[in-house]
Length: 110
Image: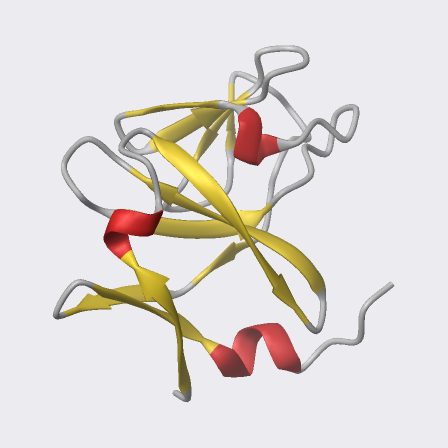
């Protein structure tokens, strides 16, 4: 994998998110209360809600528009039949958040 440094973990609020611009559009980077980080598409498949403005709880995020809950590990919606978001591989290294660049550069932006 090819990794790109997208910032320090302290730049993402605890139980919050920030947006990162990539070749495929904006990706939401989420931080849990336990200082874990996850990355996923920012748009909810239900009504396009901005997931980066949602509530992070455990390893999930709740869409701010209609309360769909997504598992940040798998992208699956909890309790919804057809809901799924794309997740991206990230890792922490010395407090820096590294995003798998190959996953976000192999598709073209819409």
